[in-house]
Image (cartoon, rainbow, N blue to C red; front, side, top):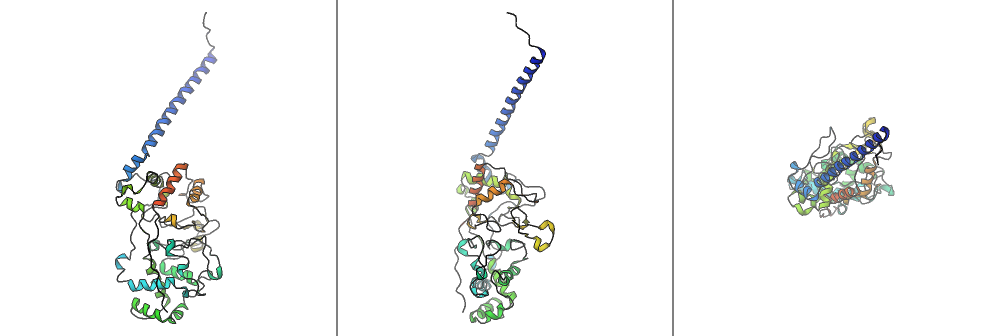
Length: 370
């Protein structure tokens, strides 16, 4: 039987469909190979080999243009570590002042009320209670490594620790005290004269010395070294495969190092991360429109131990914060973009954050003077 020749239209259509199928097969093969290569690139064995090298040989992090970043590193010492012996009397004075409720108007609140050593120097609640049970506006952050920050408080309104010490004492809603009147109050406590004399060479008590002693004490507060520090120091089995994957996700796909880099996991800047929730942040200090909603980038050291999280304590679980960033907050800050992470990558990222979190160092509270 003679085979009928297909009309030109059908023949052309057939060839197009055949070509399309071939293209799909080729594209699928390319994607499959690419996916396999990506899996091989991020395999636990390869990541362990890469990250077992010194940090200067690690894969390049994903950093946006214009960001000046520092590689992750071992937990640093306090800048006063070498001077602790010569400053021991000032440190002891500052410690007593920090824990003394008599610095407050009611005699019931101390600096340590919101910064408790057994809770990694936080208070473990959404927002602290101040004078007359007033609920404070923001969450109390840890005071570990406060010497690191260029600006203090969530909104960056204090220029240094001495300046910061005046804030809670003078605040009507926090300690409800008066720094100008505090020297007179402390002079009535005989034991303080001896402490000031040992610290400064004479028993004079004034606001600047009070703030200075508290600041010196706070500069000694540091974290305990974590499993991540052990990993950096050469103990390469201290991180699991999932945790190593989380480290890689943190440095690359999740783009965390745009704002959380260096040994203390903070860029020491202020950002509008899209979650200010009406808090004007640094705008109240600078009065510049571009600073509206900007808040301090906290250190991620001990992050799993210092909740609730965010400036207002609104997040009770770190995974919730990861989900918030995954959705992509509404912010003018170009560094804050939606995280395109799989469920497995989110879990790995959370696992890594646990490796930079450690229980607090043992701390002996002072016996207060009388």
